[in-house]
Amino acid sequence: MEQVKLYDTTLRDGMGGQGMSLSVGEKLNVVRALDTLGIQFIEAGFPSSNPKEAELFEQLSGLKLERAAIAAFGMTRRRDLRAEDDETLAVLVGCFAPVVCLVGKSWGLHLEKVIKVSAEENLAMIADSISFCRGEGKRAVFDAEHFFDGYRDDPGYALECLRAAAEAGAENVTLCDTNGGSLPDFVGETTAAVVAALGGEVEVGIHTHNDAECAVANSLAAVRAGARLVQGTVNGYGERCGNANLASILPALQLKMGFDVVSEERLASLTPTAHYLDEVCNMAADPDQAYVGRNAFAHKAGMHAAGVAADARTFEHLDPAQVGNERDILPSELSGKATIRSQAERAGLELDDEAAVRAVERLKEREHRGYHYEAAPASFELLLRREAGSYEPLFKLESFRVTTEKRADGRVETEATIKVEVDGERYVRVAEGNGPVNALDLALRTAIVDRHPHLADIELTNYKVRILDETHGTEAVTRVLLDSADGEREWGTIGVSENIIEASWEALVDSLEYAFQPRGEAGGG
Image (cartoon, rainbow, N blue to C red):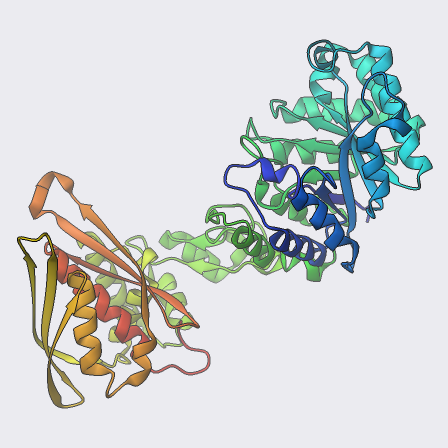
């Protein structure tokens, strides 16, 4: 298979995205993850643009990588200055990075409005800079900034810019859709024209932005037209609408277009790598992201779930395991027996036909009342356990009472009293908390942890309230979602009631009872 190489620019172009700011240690973690994934080039930024970058390059110089080559980024020499006298270029050739990527102009508008040089001087700036870096032993990539805009205005001059870089020794000339406004047909046609014009003397690359929601499509169109290096960022990080998303481009190139990009084993690490990078970059993972999103292979409609159960190809464009993802059958009012059985199997439960039918009806009835089990898989498992006959109640409730008192000094105090039976013994417990849910949680824990001490480790990590049918005002139904964790697992539960405290109690009890249920090695969670 013919090879296409990937060039990740998360640590330079990706840092232009809103909210992106990484420490040196975090950037090193990004490099390690990208290298393990099999990315061939990792652009680390400009070696001394600030103290953080200087320290990063110092740390990178001693980092042993399996496959990736580190690239340092900079610009062509300044006007009216020899390349060997340009301080920026001196820093690039003086750093350890074996590859330098130089960005230069290829659009007349920028020559006139931005750098204010003649067309001839710009060509000299490109050639001199590439030649100098090559003479200092560096591999050189030339990024032709705004290439597609320049090609629209003056295709002849845009090509001259590429030739100047190629003749000076660049191993790759990358066509940049810097403003992100080009469409796939034009990108493909232009890339094909460039490949034909350069006659195979230099490799062609593609660098696209997502302002028109076409960055991935544009990158694939360019590869189909002859480009053999794709620049982008995993998860599409970047300024404005982001860069081309390598998490989509990689599997598309390898599984759809038949190119050799990374090994099958590395490709199978794509989903965990993409999620890990979101964590490192402090970005919320997009559940609907292609290939690697939590919902990328999730099925909700009953017909879809049944089809996937019969043959996954009916509603999946590839095996999720190929990209390290997994199939998920979501419970909802659209569910049928296939969905129910799939969820039961994942929990280590067995449901016969009669139990599966009951579970479907129970699910539909409760979703009609406002339950939303997609967001509360632990509560749904408890529903299945009840129908399968494997549910074990943690306690028997006699009553609970919550009082909230606001005092003249502004303080608000909440007290909860519960009466429950645990393992045949009656417990009455009182606790104060910073709100009704906290007070109920503390009171209930004091009653059950003597018998079941492992439940003391459960922590409520999130509490969300949604009012359903807002037009009913204070009589509206309330949906409460709780997220819980015990240091090893995380799970979500739900409660629905016209009374917010009752809804909260239901979600709280489900959280504890889910953790209480006995499980074999293959069961639940």
